[in-house]
Amino acid sequence: MSDEPADDEVVRTAAEAAEGVVFAHYDQSAVTDLDVTVTFEEGVLDVDVYLNAPDDPDPDAVAREAAETAGEAVDELFAE
Image (cartoon, rainbow, N blue to C red; front, top):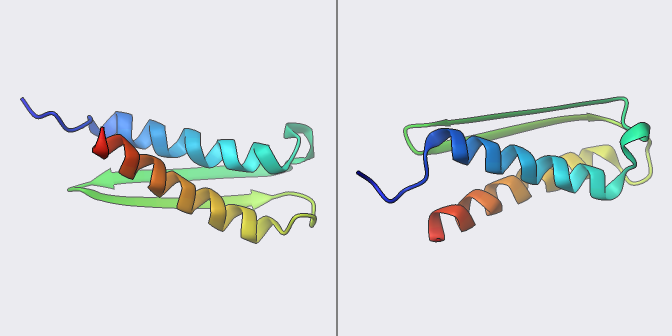
């Protein structure tokens, strides 16, 4: 048995981290659409964040920050 986290735990950790960033910047009611897609296959993490929200702050920048934060959260998960 491996000490590494299960794939579903990796996906859940990344998704929760990405959503946390988005909702730190916007009230939930201000977000028109949020789609966080996370895959983790063969040790490769892929995070895609689509955000439709008000222009302040820039939703593209927030989506990029959310994806980066998701990756960092997974890195921390593996470091535990």
